[in-house]
Image (cartoon, rainbow, N blue to C red; front, side, top):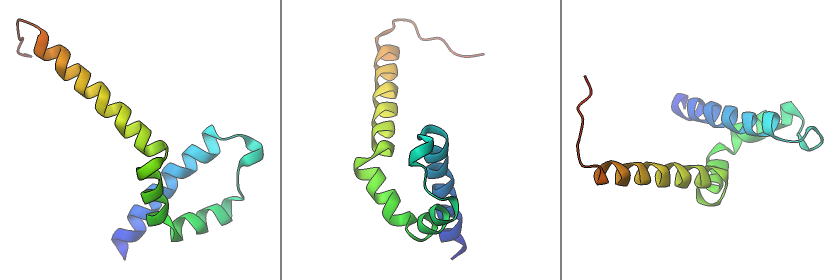
Length: 83
């Protein structure tokens, strides 16, 4: 139960930042209802966001950027060690 509450809190905090910082003031939900609903439905919300929402787009963008960086590093001739 503690693990669920911790993960639900982290997910609700993330969604809260997305909603209340980047959302328009007119479209923000009431804070108490938002917290209760997201705490109860955190797994469903996470699954929906991971399969087709903003979270999926961000993960794919980060993956593409890391892949491009890896490819650029592989194409360079001389490898440097840090230090």
